[in-house]
Length: 380
Image: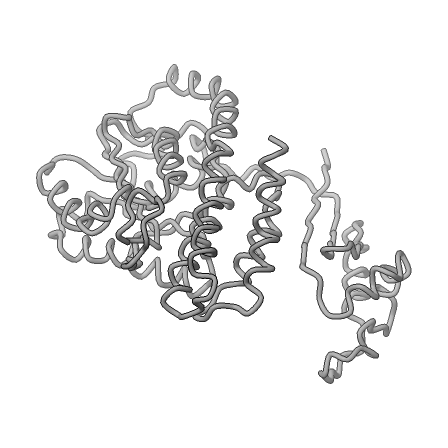
């Protein structure tokens, strides 16, 4: 039975966008016309040898697939949509839906975000780590500063156990552990992947073989992924939490690190346990959707607001680093609750601010970001 694949690419307005909006449906028709370039008379200051056939070729390809493409120029964004009939292909390997880590595994994670620490506890639950064996760190500067020593000591004191380690890539340390109104006079960002590398290098080979260590980050460029994979055993993206997606992500990484002793061995869970897990999967997903409270997102907005007001006349590189780290944390949290792509454009706005220096248009961009998040919260 055929279904339909729909892919949307959403971009922010570019040069001449207001003119395209004013053209209405005519602009959409011209985009896919043979030999047409809508920006040929614009003042972009750039020359091009393009014949203007790119979109026309895309439409031809879509028709070969019995599909369609369209583009809509809205007031605040441009949406390109591709649709095509598609047959669903089951890619899950046997046992993934009910995969759980073997009993006795320790789950150790660190993140400086309160929201992410809550999600990590739930993440470990979906992966099969029992609550008494979950250790979630990152609430204080001390926990971040002593993370490497803590893990090395803990692994050493548990010579017969295996460990599932997750570290956020950007761990903020400052003198404001309660995130209150105190002035942040000192600030430093620690790399979670670098911590993992230190841990792996410090442990002896036998100890390191008992650990699966992953980096978790909102940044996923090819350069970022290459760095994570060079230091850890793998990478976990910050995405909306779902029980099945957790098991899909963890299962291949765990089985690669700890190959089953016999073909088809899926751990210590019997058939009754698997049936039970399948029955409660939908209930778990409902719980995941309500795990993050609107007040927690509002608290992050207020934190950034405070920094904006406190340092509104200070655009130094050091102060921007503090502000960017808070924005990066917000980006990661929004990615984790980005159900139905509600925050995709907001995440894009935050990423557009990335850089070493304070952007000249920061306040206008921040007000747009803040407005999007507040609008979402008010609808819940």
